[in-house]
Image (tube, rainbow, N blue to C red; front, side):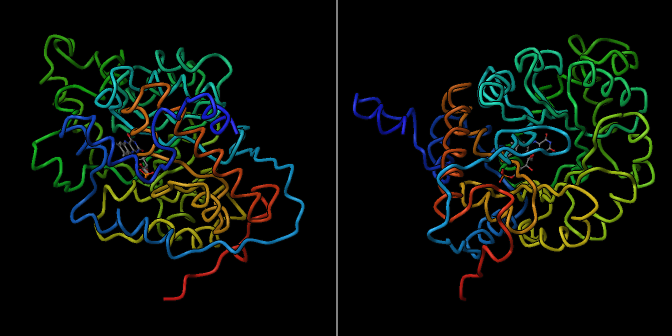
Amino acid sequence: NDIYLNGLDGHLPPFTTDLTALGASARERLDPGAFGYVAGAAGSGATHRANREAFERHRLVPRMLRDATARDLRTRVLGTDMPAPVLLAPVGVQSIVHPDGELATARAAASLGVPMVLSTASSYTVEQVAEANGPDAPRWFQLYWPNDDDVCLSILDRARRAGFTTLVVTLDTWTLAWRPQDLDQSYLPFIRGVGTAIPFSDPAFRAGLAQPPEEDLIAAVLRWVPMFTGTDRSWERLSFLREHWDGPIAVKGVQHPDDARRAVDAGMDGVIVSNHGGRQVDGAAASLDMLPEVAEAVGDRTEVLFDSGVRTGSDVLKALALGARAVLVGRPYAYGLAHGGEEGVRHVLRSLLADLDLTLGLSGHRTPGELSPDSLRHRPS
Ligand code: FNR
């Protein structure tokens, strides 16, 4: 309504409300390296395309003459109350698309009460982002799990003190995938120290360096890379994180139902079905296609969340119908940040939430909990 009323005064939205079209306009605003990093995917892009194609294959079946005038999108996920079943996915290195980076995102998220999940690969420190996010906003912390326990505990401790309540442990990025867009341009923000603010500011990390990162960037990167990559962490070792984090923990990057079961057995409170937006394993299954199996395997024992490919309100509803309690969005808000910093992220979020609210009602539902597999049909092939 605001948008139409503002239009009467000649005020148009700051940029498109079609979140599927944001990538194309972001390309014009970003340098080719930064755009390639955000938009890019692993290998041939097969999984990136499959994520969208899976949403296209599932279709909502709206129900008529049902009372859907007063809708309530509020949801509680892993102990966090949120205005709608939507969170901002952890997206690292945000300063490559806008100088305010994660600070702008934190402000926009707080203004709408939408939880942000802060990446370990942030351009700003946990303390700075928490301050921008404010005293009352809900915030979760995403851990790239270092193999140095002192550094791990120090980062967790800082996150907890800064008011991050839920921990998201990303499992699918123990090394970076083959990403032609980045390789062709030899573009990796991390080797320039972008996205390393959290470890580089960490006392336990700095204690292992002869010189501070500000004086010897290369030495700091050489200490950081092996610490945050590799496969020497295990399902059993999750007990270490369980022991040292007293809030809820979710693992991100789960695709196979057996891995979801292992996560629950390891005491995890949630699983995030995700293929990292098609950025890790080229040729991997569409994330949406794995969601029903995971929900079936563990949905009664844990909270199942979803990401990879969500662009519209109806996408959110489809994921909920297939068993997700909430979804995370990645690239759309990164593109919003590129278009207009804090205001741009807010515009993307408001558009998504308004679309979700309208589509929920028009399809005959009052609350997200009313969606079920019967709300969908497969598009005839
Ligand atoms: C990501 N993602 C990600 N995930 C994570 O756990 N830690 C991180 O630091 C990052 N960084 C990151 C950077 C960029 C530029 C992108 C696009 C993505 C993955 C992210 O959390 C999420 O899984 C996907 O973005 C979801 O797919 P969509 O919504 O982008 O299609």
